[in-house]
Each structure stands twice: as C-alpha cells, then as structure tokens.
Image (cartoon, rainbow, N blue to C red; front, side, top):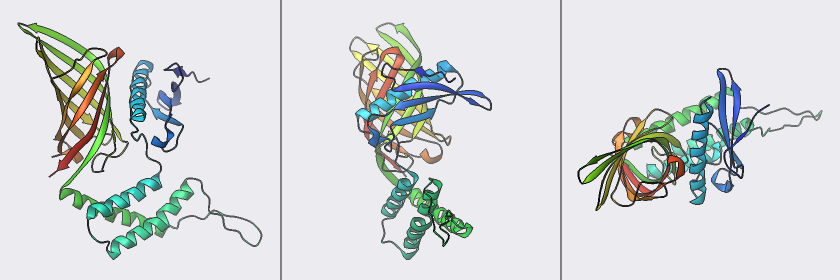
Length: 311
C-alpha cells in the first residue's frame, strides 16, 4: 500500500514513493489553484529524482514554495500542449526571421500543420475513424514517408533557427528561485563582520521571449553569498551557477546593499547574467530582483523584466 506524506495542512502538496527497477523513487503531487497557468491541469506530478525521503521532502517543499509564488504572480508553470508549443515555435521563428514568408517556409508550415498535428492527435488517443460498408472501423495512421518529410522540415527549420541565433539575439524573461541554505558562518574582523552563506535550489523561467530561456523551464542552481556587514549597512555579492537539464551552465551574480538576510527579512538588489557554457555562452544581461528569507532556511528570489542579449 502506497504511503502518502502530506507536506502542508491543506494537502496541496503530497509526497509518495514508487517502485522502480533500481529500488524506490519519490514523486510529489501538487494541487494547482490557478489551472490556466499549468495547461488547465488540476494537479502537477513531478519526480523528486531520489529514493531518500529526507532529500525528497526538501525538494518537494522547495518546489511547492516555487509553485505558490508563480501562481501568486500569474507566471506560467507549464505550457498547454505539444501542438501549442509547435504553433508558438512557428510564429516565433517567422517573427525572428524578419522577412516576408518564402514559398519554402509556407510549404514547411503547411506540412507541419497537415502531418504533424494529425500525428499528435493520434498519439494523444484521438482516433481518426473510417467507416466501411460493414460498419467496421480502423485507426488511421501516418505513413512512413510522411514522418520522414515532417522530420526533414523540422531539421531544416532548426538549422535556419540556429543560423539566426548566431547572428545575434536578445529578449527578456522573468525568473523565480527557490533556495535552501545548506550552511552559514560568520567571522568578526574589527569594525565589520564577514558572513558566508552556501545554498542549493532551483530556478524557473517565465514570460520569456524565447532564446535559451524556454517558457516554464526549470534548472538547478548552487550559490555562495559573501556579505560584509558594518554599523552603516551591508554589501552582498552572490555568485551563482545554474545548470539546465542539458548540462549547459548559466553564470549569475546577485548584488545588493540594502535589507537584511535573517529569517523574515530580505531586500532588493540587481542580478547580472555573465555568460556560461553551451547555449548560454557569451550571454549578458541584468535586472532588478527581490529576495525574501523564510523560516527553515528557505529563500525565495523573484526577478521581472530581465533583459539579455547574445553577440
């Protein structure tokens, strides 16, 4: 019998184990209040990618806090469907190309609309039924040559998209970070105190124009904050490394000189994007952010209107 672990009083966040070949893994189920932000889904189920209950509880708690903030600020949690994503991609691609549609692109659009969307419908369980004289039915399937043509068009489209990206791109996005403080120490030095804070967590991007920041995507992060505190105030600098599921890294630095860093406190500062690896190489940008320190060593950072560009 599966044992559910409730993470909040209203049972909006529940953790439960599942048997897998290598043993056991924990999953979390989150109740979504604003379903329009999550593709009209009432529940969001995600793997915590561990069989350790303590670690899974920590990750699920962080994710629940992140989802709560996203909903409170009307930020997208999950896009609607594969078809919506493909349609959005075609519109974005044609817009970024910045030219009148050529016959080749028109053919590409027609082929994707005709073949790929019908294939998606079949894969989603929408059966295209054809009646015969004996009232029998059969499921219509996509022929192999149509699959090959569709794949070729996607490859061609991706190639053109990559060429456009190398010529320079820019955009804006928002993000929310959910961080758990792992360690903290302080050293007194004369008239000031030096404080170091180490943490790990996740970052979720929303309201994105595209580029390397996919709408609703998440990545893991590690951060070390250095703080110099005096009677007149404080100066904080937090280098941060963000790793997305593909292994590409984005380097960030968070800076602020106002507010506090104790439980219940926080403040406002500026985030700077300083390049990285893979798709983030050469990327720069900046934006204001607001941080809140919660109980239990949890930290939430929210930034809006982050402008970025690649050479």
